[in-house]
Length: 130
Image (cartoon, rainbow, N blue to C red; front, side, top):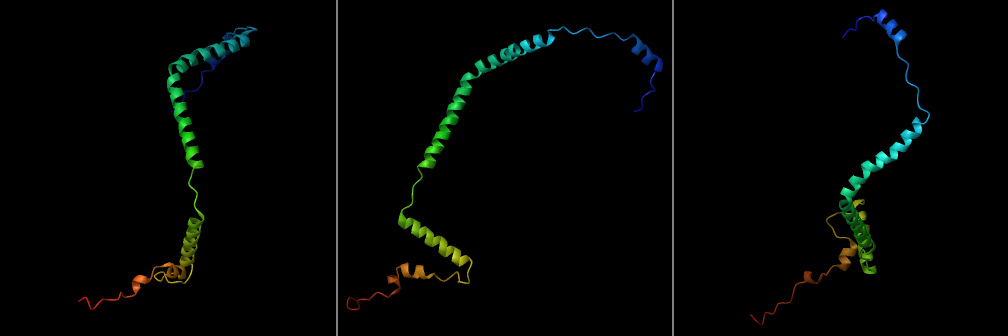
C-alpha cells in the first residue's frame, strides 16, 4: 500500500493554527488520586459480597483437604524390625541378582535355607493298608 506524498501546505497550516492545550489545574493530580480508591472499592465490594459464601466454602474445603493430608502423612504405619530385615534382604538379593552373574532361575542361598523343603521328600506309604 502506497501513501500519497505529504501535503506541505496542510502541514504548515496545522502547525501555524493549532490550538494550545488548556492549562492544567494545580490540584488535578490530587483529585485523580483521591478518586481512584473510591472507584476501586466501589467496584470490588459488590462482587465480594455476592461471592462471600462461595469463597468461604472453598476455603473450608481446601483447609480440610490439607488437614486430612497432613494427618495421613503423620500417621503412616511403621515397619517392625522383622519386616525391615525382610525388606532389606529382598532389596539386597534383587540388586545382587540384577547386577551379578548369578543365574536368575536358581534360588539364592537364603531362599534355600528359608524354604520349607519337607515336601521334597517322599512320604512313606503304608503298604499294609492296601
